[in-house]
Length: 190
Image (tube, rainbow, N blue to C red):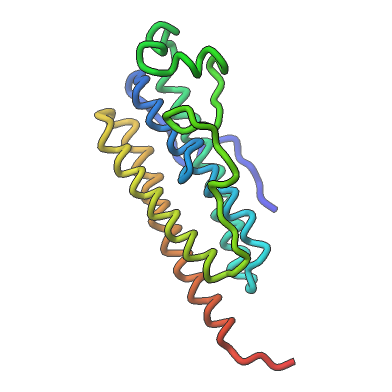
């Protein structure tokens, strides 16, 4: 299937702790348009794709989204490293700390837990690939907004990498859509 290498897809660095930014990043950890939702959406939709190319693409991108989830988790942990509970409380993460301590939990920045209703799978390849393209655009936009919320050049580097991967995924889903539509429109002889 695939080989896991014990290193991140792209290095994650932060220049200094930043509790507010860590909280903002939770949108890409457990939010509706975050990396977990994307990974599960694509890995689920692959089964109804009519071509091997589309199935393979959804498997590859779904797996890569899990790597992005790992990068987001690393960013959050590094941004919170050494921050005392009193600061977490003051910055709006006191509730999270009280329940989960320093462990991450799949929530958005407002503390709303992740739910399977965030992912879509219609079983129609064209609908699903359009959904996937929209999901990638939402993720790209989220990364652009996150980049504008930080002044940490180290963190911006990782966020820019993730934003660019969303652009590539959007393009690849467009190619898969063309492939699937061509397959569905072709005459098939049995």
